[in-house]
Amino acid sequence: MAQIEGWLPGARPAVVRVADKWHSSYRGRDAYWISWGEGDVRVPGNHRIDLRESEWRSTRVGDQLEVVYAGTGRFNVYRRGGVFTEPGNFVLDGLLLLIETLLVWFGARRLIRGIRRAAPSVYRATGGL
Image 1 (cartoon, helix red, strand yellow):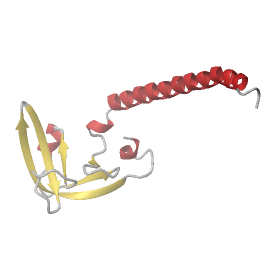
Image 2: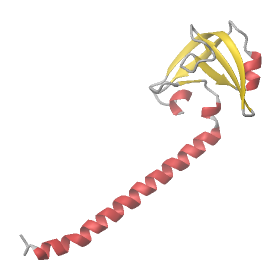
Image 3: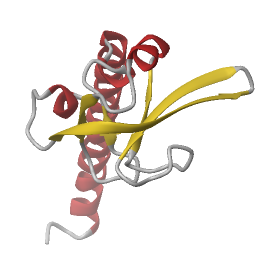
Image 4: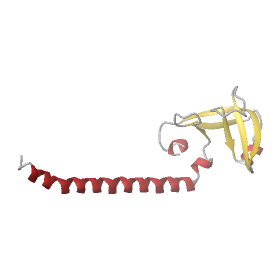
């Protein structure tokens, strides 16, 4: 997310020209797609992106938009200010990072204590060698 917003290096912004638009609905969830280049808007890939409805409605075929390529995955294209960069997602990511850090810290602490408890008995069993 920080790469998408430009706070960390690694993302590649690109200006694309909208080639097609498509609205899909599946199990009550609407998706508003735009595509650029030669790819079909109905086929998943890095040539399309899902927008918010209001942004999709105001975008016309032929308009230019900035997209950001971040990461190396198959679906690595984003829009600045999109759903992936909302403040709630930053809070969630921060919370997950804190939990992961605490788990590593407590795990390492427990491992070190276990080694220290075992060390004296090993020392006694080998006669100090």
